[in-house]
Image 1 (cartoon, helix red, strand yellow):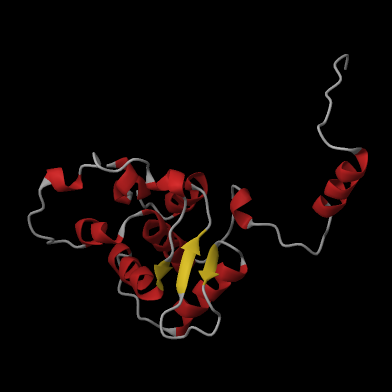
Image 2 (cartoon, rainbow, N blue to C red):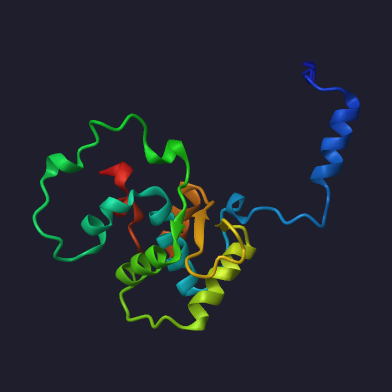
Length: 171
């Protein structure tokens, strides 16, 4: 304890930061935790949301269709792209794209019931997904996945899903 580390803020600013951090009413983002218990289909919904947020929509055919036709490998080379999608951050995606990816990655047949939609709402409440746009937009709500790559890899590991195989940046 012989070294003193100086802070670049005043003592009043430091006290304000400490008071804001100690606010018990504030919901902290769950993606900062390494272990979160979620229902089985909520994990797959979160995986599908992550894939929809970080993969371009034009690659859905390649990743999620069994017989997607012949696609030249050169068309999927990223030579014209300047930065990776993970560095740019998550993109918003419509609900129907989320459901299409969900139905293609889940092994069993999942009916589009109210249970699936309530789990999506729960993920928004837990701040793992963010509803983008207006709340009254019923025809096609758009979402954004707010979890990190390490968090989604931990979730995917619990359901034996290799998410790296489905990410465009890791081709």
